[in-house]
Length: 170
Image 1: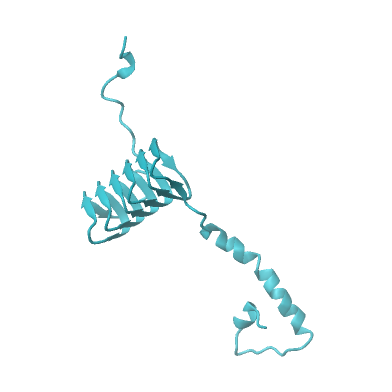
Image 2: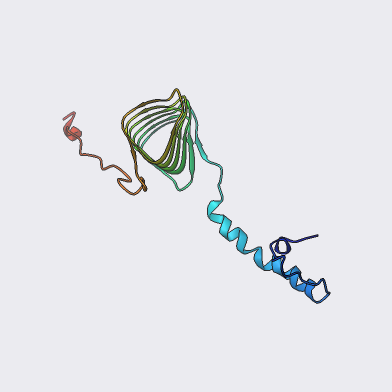
């Protein structure tokens, strides 16, 4: 049986199959194997956090992982990969490496990769590195390409309220 290291060896320099060389070949995969999982660790994907259709959140969401939204969010969202389901509505700024919109977004979208499916409804500006808009998607706003759309304005600054409600009821 051939190991991976034998397959990648230079065929111009064949090694004789001697008893002395066999132990060395057996040890090469053992040395290389621990390095492979460490290099793959940053690419490892876990299951996304799913916010169901009957859930409404008022506030900002932030994660280093993946999120799938099926409910309603009133606030800003920051994630690695964000999927907005067909039944979902997001009102706020969306910031993610990859954004897939199947539902409704009211607010600015920032993403390295943005995809609007045929069921998407977006009201707001999109700042992206790459974008795909399927036929049937509804979009109202502007589109701007940037090499690094996540670097500017990560979270919007909220203005103070126009009315002071602290004295209501006095």
